[in-house]
Length: 225
Length: 231
Image (cartoon, rainbow over all chains, first blue to last red; front, side, top):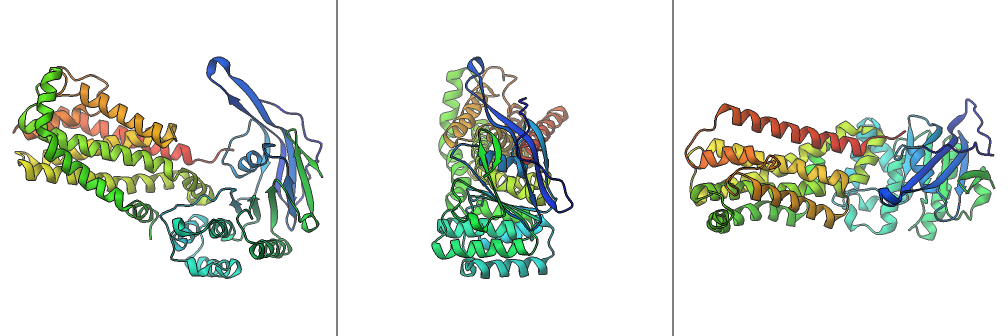
């Protein structure tokens, strides 16, 4: 277990807070047992996101952004620190986690069941997302037949299907064409205005003016950039 | 549509998988039963005639199911975990995966069993059918368990093949005395008895049921463990 020092970035606790990450540490063990070494990646990372905020998390390749995101979501365990997250969260992973042999419609169906949506609400939300991201004509297509950009649209739409309180986006627009990229930011801003808390992880954020706050992950800690 | 049906459909959409499920057991039983007797004698075992063909059906169903189980566990792991975290729960996703895999194992076992019936007929067909199915279920679990710890397709396939070969060459019929690590030895005992017109004692059936139950429970636990939330 690795214990890191608390981050310089403050963690505010308020009634509007939808994500609180406090002093999270994580180290990976590398090499065979007789030459095992520990590589610390997160050394006390802290950040927070309030409802209605659009927050960025940037950092160089290998700085630990995706590791932190996976810890926040619950895909990876942490060595130390705390993570407070709401029960209704949406997660859009960096690489689309989809089933190649299932259709777009079947993906929506599986996730609607998982989110506990009733069929009518699920259909309404699905149709709105298909319209918003303009990929309704692919509803009956299997994922293996979709382009990289359309897979990414589905990846994003599945995270938004249940209108989460907190939306976690890991490099969400890779593979998007320019028009879809612009539409993505419009969608993000609209949801932020509606009260959703959004955390966007990217190695490069060129739309900083749209963001409430940007954290930079440097040497395992989050600093407000 | 239920989660299980969707997962089963996912597997059935790979036409080559379907062909393998049916063709491998059928071809193996038809083509290799005679050779297996010679091979067993060379190893010091007593496998011969009808018993050889019956074991060929069990082994072929086992190998196909083991390989399928491995790819079930590895190919969809990321998406399954995402679904579990979205609210489906690790246990329910694991249950759906295992149930969908069971359907495929039943198809593989059915193909081997039908090929066996066509080739030579069996004195106790229900016993033989149950034993071939047990082979498929045990190896389905072996494949899933290997998939839980090895993610590379080459390494995982080799691991399934290694367990299978070790099992075959140390099991009843092939070795003078079945080794304790032969995971399918109880299924083989029941299958050989059924093919040679003998009834298996109740203790063999109980032992076989226990092995299958442990195998399936372990594979469920492995699936659920890999899909669980951390933190």
